[in-house]
Amino acid sequence: MRTPLIDLRGIRKSYGGGDSPLVNVLRGIDLSIHAGEFVAIVGASGSGKSTLMNILGCLDRPTSGEYLFAGENVAALGSDELAWLRREAFGFVFQGYHLIPSGSAQENVEMPAIYAGTPAAERHARAAALLDRLGLASRTGNRPHQLSGGQQQRVSIARALMNGGHIILADEPTGALDSHSGAEVMTLLDELASQGHVVILITHDREVAARAKRVIEISDGLVISDTANDRSTPPVD
Image (cartoon, rainbow, N blue to C red; front, side):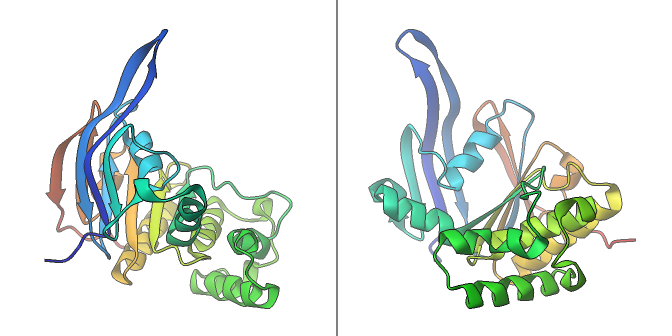
């Protein structure tokens, strides 16, 4: 039996306590994800999906429970090891793109590699290759305001892949896009999963979630359904 890349066991997350009311955001999440999966985590506002994303991406730690990454307990990692894992294994894609306004597409894509200490020539070449792969070879020098929303999101996906991005965490990646651009982004995420990346899509939109190969619904901090989805991402018109 294959070891899951991500294995959550009884994950709980609470805030408050003491003089403040205790709020239980996650109330015992069990979840396993393997390499190459395209998973959507869907839930209404306040369901706990954003908190779960932060824990999956090692941006936050659970109050209790185990998080195993490739069989290793994340709780046993020191701050430097955790930072390395977050930087090298995960890539983040957000609804608002989070691009640096004054930077070109190429410079934005290179940012994670700068923090990782990658030599300039190597990061220049990799960023250019990623932008070419995502259909933006002619836009490398453009700043965000010179790009459409769909192009900006592709830049943010290229940035997420810069250090490897074996696991892509995409938080409402189509939320600010028109239907055509949104469909293009979903097709791209599907292609990344088929190439071996884990793609975890966080969304409140069931139609968007239905384009993933597996749909996990979370409500009140609990997984209430986990179903395989045999529908493919619809073609872009």
